[in-house]
Image 1 (cartoon, rainbow, N blue to C red):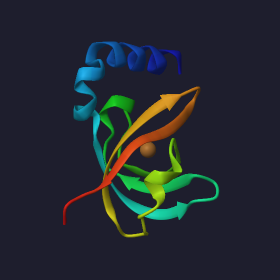
Image 2 (tube, rainbow, N blue to C red; image 1 turned 60 degrees about the horizontal axis):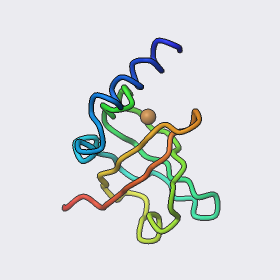
Image 3 (cartoon, helix red, strand yellow; image 1 turned 180 degrees about the vertical axis):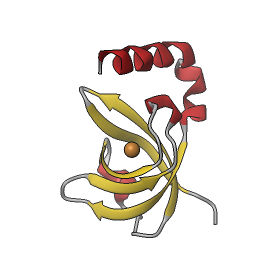
Image 4 (cartoon, rainbow, N blue to C red; image 1 turned 60 degrees about the vertical axis):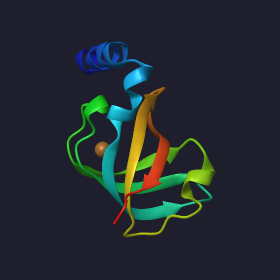
Length: 96
Ligand SMILES: [Cu+2]
């Protein structure tokens, strides 16, 4: 766990904000929980989080990000780890 956090910290510093766009990951919406401000995504690898492909629940920073989403939508998103939780900070529908 410590090693993983250290690796993430290093990646965050190495990438910096200028490369935030490159941290975009691809996923498909499985479930939208607007009240709980959560979204379940079946995502491909998330490089900045060192995360392999999986289906998981993310918290969402801004409920607005969920306003136009439905299960089955393909999305591009940026997720960050904040206080041990994975939070989606940006999300757009992928062009189909
Ligand atoms: Cu994941």
